[in-house]
Image 1 (tube, one colour):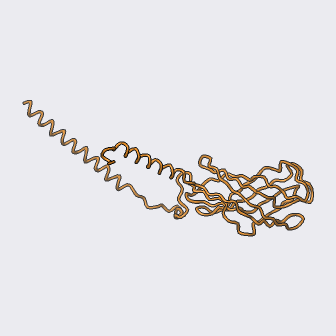
Image 2 (cartoon, one colour; image 1 turned 90 degrees about the vertical axis):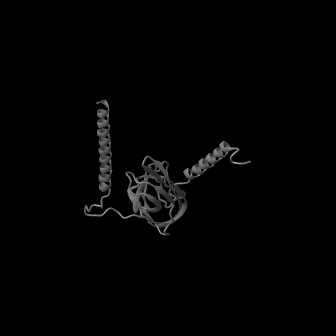
Image 3 (cartoon, one colour; image 1 turned 30 degrees about the vertical axis):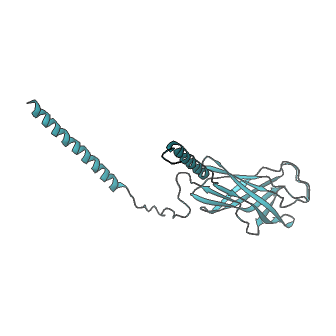
Length: 229
């Protein structure tokens, strides 16, 4: 069975293979998320406490931003008294790495139910909006957790250098630079400009084309006038 005998079938198979390859590329994940264990050392009003909680950070694209959600699978502290509904408000910071540096603030709603005394405090999901400022791979790592309840503040700091929980391949809004490239020069220094010479050449070429067209037109009119004499 030769190619010459079945050109349409061969072309169809080639097209199908190309489409399949494109589908694989389009399906390539732009994010990677892992559950990581975080050993929190908490400073509470009644003394120091510690607890390990698996943390999951996820990102969902929303326009040019990402909605980031930090989930705690276990409680990390407790209270010597009952915490009534709405008495506890959690927040945290997520460390950014890779193409960007800094932190992202996330917070969650107050506790929806009463937390009994001396039981692990379940942290509600913490959310925040991340807007890429640079293009590249950005990592998200759990940072300090803060719990405010009954007029007190508990601060829980990771002590085990937790691993990255989420990696996003992002594109900065407005075409920001990649994380590996240098930032724009400070102090208003202008970058070398490119393009004007090419534009001048293009305009010159256009002018030459118009000139040639004009010369051809004059020559045609001269020959036409001589033919009618």
